[in-house]
Length: 417
Image (cartoon, rainbow, N blue to C red; front, side, top):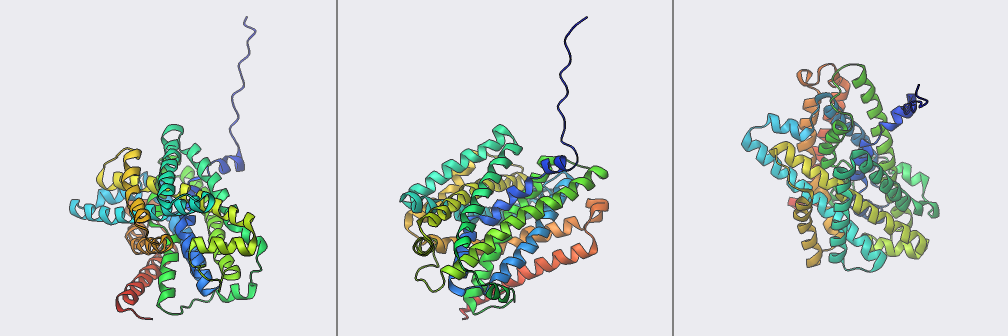
């Protein structure tokens, strides 16, 4: 008789541990909510207008929770991403036009993220912005390649690690700042003070409810969990997804609101704090060089992580709408060029970041309206279609975003104050 004994089978995580192991896709998508565009928009809003626009971030984050859950649900129920569903439903000409606006959105996304990484490297090491942008592009390509070489789970771990660095980098300053609780509460009352605050609100909205995250999250959920069909497994995955989305966006929302509160409490009235470089200098003067370094490290992590996620979203959009896949390196080079041009010609980085976020805000309805329609479709979603209250809330979100965009365009065209 053989004296060998069979090795015990590895234990699978049970109960809560198994559920925790299924978390992750929403945290990758959440990187889009704490990218350098958020930094520029939130610091500018806090430095110029104090606590006035806190309500925009709270409202935007609440909308993002619902929107990202619907995106993930579409991927789980149908086994297809939102771009793939659009590719199947749109006619050839419409599909190409839709792709063009989505690519413009992807270019604006990449512009913000590469510029943010370049600014961070300039603050940390004094590198020229163009060189910093080039390094950001190269390193982000290496991060993105992890997904194809090591799988999505490893990619998730890397991105979540960068999210932790971002959170620490942007919230550390609050420990050394006297934030007014009374003014924070007052900032929850919706109001504007002129056309510039509407521009900033649209920028903050575009930086928070990110259209490329809407497109990508459906693919992340599908690729991580596969086509779930209908039944107990799907219901369990949807329940876990709600926790995934809620946890990820609580973190992202805290970072965004923390940045605005930091600027409102420590930077208001200080000259030139409506730019990232000026805010960094003011943070160094008022809170110390250590906090300033941590802030710059957080900005660098934000640029590297978010440009990797943005490039992945652009790839999924092209595949879904045109059924075309190009190598990651080729796409990285193509999407890097506009950002490098902006850096080379000397356009103000903070202004470029804010304008890019306005472009993103204008593109949100193109992703959001089809998502609401599809997830409310009984034929497509079956018993997992949106409940009437969910559909109503989603349409309210779409209406608010569209109304803000219309107001922004009107004030920009007319030059109203």
